[in-house]
Amino acid sequence: MLQLHAVESGYGMGQVLFGVSLSIAPGACVSLMGRNGMGKTTTVRTIMGQLPLIGGQIHRFDDDRPDIMPFEIARAGIGLVPEGRQVFSNLTVAENLQTFFRPPQDKRQSHWQFERVLTLFPRLAERVGHLGSHLSGGEQQMLAIGRALMTNPKLLILDEATEGLAPIIRRQIWDCLNTLKAEGQSILIIDKNVKAIAKLADHHYILDKGRIVWDGDSASLLGTPDLTARYLGV
Image 1 (cartoon, one colour):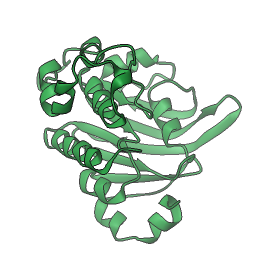
Image 2 (image 1 turned 180 degrees about the horizontal axis):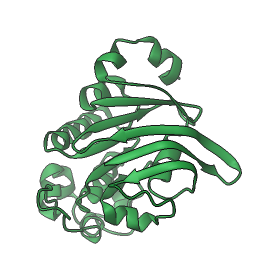
Image 3 (image 1 turned 180 degrees about the vertical axis):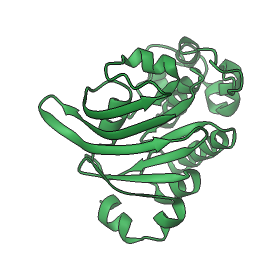
């Protein structure tokens, strides 16, 4: 579904990623972890075509074109929940969702539409006529996830899924993601909550200074406590 092989990328003359390789199979949930500034968001932006590929290859649904445009990547079936949420502040909840609707490309996919997103996030149903700027941070994150689901993605990418949210909202987001995984949604998630992410994801990658320094399953992640101290602690 998605494969990065020896990917190098960065900003202008500043290289950030050095030979990053990872893969996501259909129906799998994979995490990308690391301290702030280690290259996680750069990886996501490179996947989405927002940053140039300096070296290596990215295969998105068997398409390995290095110059593919971001809108083509979205159309191919990658839905992004970006860091900072980036909802349209001057549009209502309903408008934010309906603007992004796109029918599923495969009849075997889950079919997401307006009413189903509101069922997944009842709080959004209560705020359906409110502008994006009038929502709390947690409500905006629910809206950002719902907006991505409205594109009926084959792969859902969440950059900092629960950062800065109240504990009760975090639990709701994790419950939502577990529901999506149970339905077979492929997911790439970035987050700092090791225990929650270990329960959700099947495989984990840790980035340090733009390089993958460890990867493994949840049992290995939780069974290697020095990993969190070395690569994930503040």
